[in-house]
Length: 185
Image 1 (cartoon, rainbow, N blue to C red):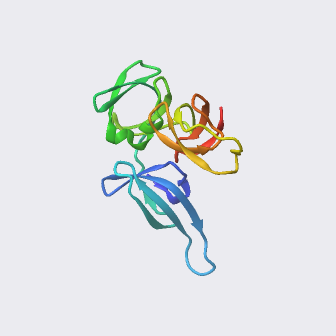
Image 2 (tube, one colour):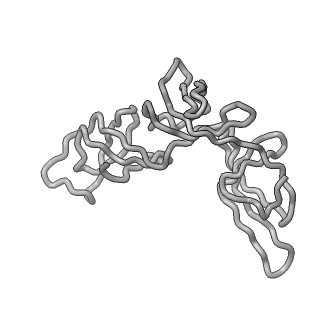
Image 3 (tube, rainbow, N blue to C red):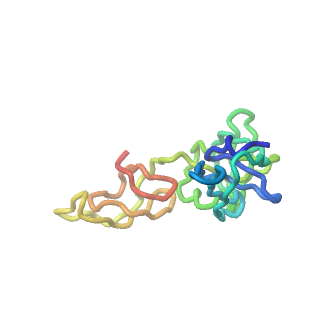
């Protein structure tokens, strides 16, 4: 059990038999009335987000979530195979659990896998990943960094928007959370 004073981003709570992760929280002390805590919660399994307000000092059940560094090895049918770096145990994780992270997942990438009761909950990639551009239309004379953007297909098959001066074969830094171009690597 944890109090609302123990809330922090990333903490996983067990509410009504479901696991919810705190993505945002704010302690509010109004001039009149008791203090309370506003939170934005994300369902770990479905990805649904809700806003919930708690009275200050309320006790909430905390779920034990074990975050482990694992290396992505290969894809096996609809599953992704990861290896624990300490025990060398291989874990098969379904496509649904990996989710949108699969767009930027390269072999031998080290990721964090959150486990609860030995069941994988979600896969968290590093914030920035470096990927090579497989294909993009060639840039033309006069293309500048502030001029606009064009689609580019990366080595993982993901398609992102890049500046006009980027060409095929270049290595880029990409934000794995939203797929935005950050710069050349």
